[in-house]
Every structure is written in structure tokens, then in C-alpha cells.
Length: 382
Image 1 (cartoon, rainbow, N blue to C red):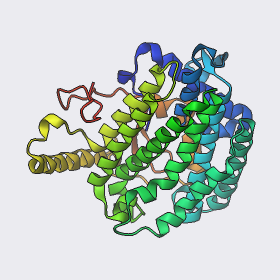
Image 2: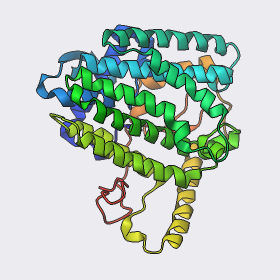
Image 3: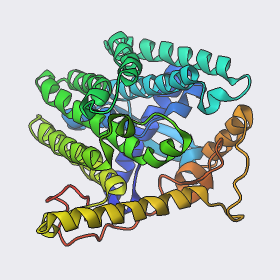
Image 4: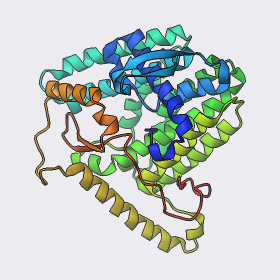
């Protein structure tokens, strides 16, 4: 959700963002091994940024040596409790995702011989997350319990079930991670504000993921909360828009020394993610609500069809190559990571699915959907 966007990141903030990214990557290497660096998660950087925002110039940092992924440049990186909290979250999310594939027997875990390896990997990542959590006095057992409760909730979900009931475990786990950032940052008075912001962040991330996968899940026959509850994209959009407002309100009420980077990630990037998924509707265009909603659905369907076509089209026409098996995909993933193609290349072929993907650091066009500055509707216009 918080993938970097060069056109929306001021030049003076790019080194600071990279400092948190590299700090998380090196923390994973030092505390969980080189393999764990593959779990580096953009969204988890928000936790490291929140810790630094409360400490200002007193935040821990150090100079890191040259790295191939930085073009052999040195970098001032974040250290201490912030990156450790972000590393715990990254490992926790990766473990839960892999375990979910193992239990469902889908994804890469469906490949012959991969299910056992995936299960061992999930257990190892969970153990590493617990160890790092202990070093910052974070009890990870309740977090894993919240995540594991998701499966039971999904099993009992049907038409009429509120979307908020499905997103509740994600909200609760994210809220506790955000609240712990207040204690690591030495500002326990911020715990409740951060807990509220974390719950809103978890809800937003869950809804964006569900909306992005809506058509693809329907095509594959996979479970999707929007289809299971009968809510649809419009209900998800309204809830996500409310989550954006709740998160901003909560962070504004917290005591923060330097809010420049938190505003970039948790406001600007978050609004941009909302706009990419749901599009933008502005208050100046809502005089005729019925007509506007019909037009919004048509524009949304057109954008979604275009996005699906881009994911499904390849350089050699419409022919779709066979997906790679687990080990071949792992080799391809390693090559893509080590050559920076996943972040710097405009388009690349997915390591396992072989679908067309877009690099996370690609240039993106500024939003020109309306004359407002984005404050009226959260559309992310600049």
C-alpha cells in the first residue's frame, strides 16, 4: 500500500525513506538471517517512521556501508527499536501469508514438494518474529492469535456480515503494533492515538487488498470478503475513505516531534493508494448523486479492465506462459531482487505467475482528476 512513488516524494525525503528501508532490511539480516530479507515490507516501514517521528534528532541511526541494491552507495540508516518493530511486523505478516497458503493448498504451496518446505519456512519466520519481539518487549503471541482468528471469521462469513467484522483481526493486530511504537519512541501518551491510527491503517490495507483482488478472485473462485459479505466495491470504498480520515485525525492528535515523513507515508501515500484502487470522486461533482454514481461505476469498471489487461498481457502477444514451479520461481525472484527489477523496472514478469507486474519505484503520473487539492475527498490529487 505504501510503495514509494518518485513523483510524490520530495527530494529531501527520499534519503530518509531509504534510511528506514535499508534499516529494516539490515535488521532482518542481522537478527533473522539473509533469507529473511526477502520479507522486507514497505507498509511495515510506517512503524519505524513513527518511532523516529517521536524522537526527532535523538532517534538512533548509523552509517551503513555500500550495498549493491543502492548502487554501491553508503547510506545513513535507522537503527534501534523502530527497525526491530518493523522487522517483527514483516516476519509476522510473511509467516501468516505462507501459513495461509499452506492451509489452503494454493499459491506456491500447491506446487509438488513445496507444501512441507513452506510450512517449515512459516514456522521459522514466526520463531524469528517472536525473538525480535522479545528484544523490544513486544509479546507476539496475542498478535499471532489475532491473525489466526481470521480463518474462523472467514469461515462464518456470509451475505449480510458487516465488512468490519471481517477486517477486525487485521485492525486489532495492526493497532497493537502501532501502539507499541509509542512505547519504543518514549511517548506512552501517544499509545491510544497510535492504536486508533493502527486500526484504521489495518482496515484500509485489508479493504484495498480485497478491492484490488475482487475480479481476479472471482475468476479463480477464491474467497474474497467483498463477495462473501455481498458488500461490493462501493461499500468498501466508503469504509476505506472513513479509515483514511480516522487515521489522519488520530495522528494529528498525537505528540510528534517531526511529522514530515509520517505525513508522506500515512497521508500522501495512503491517499494515493486509495485513489489507485477506488478512483476519485470530489464534492464539486456530487450535485446529481445518482448520475454521478453511475458514471463512477463506469469509470471504475473501465480502469479495472485496463489494469487487468495490463496484468494479463505480455511482450509476445496475448499468449500466457505456463507458471513456474516453486523452485524455478524462487530463482527468478532472487534474480529480480538482486538486479532491482522489482523496484526500478517499469514492467517485469512475475517470478511464479509470469504475469506482467509494475515496478514499485516506477514513475507515475500526477492525479489530474479534479481541480481540488485532495482534501475534500481523500482522492490524493496534488
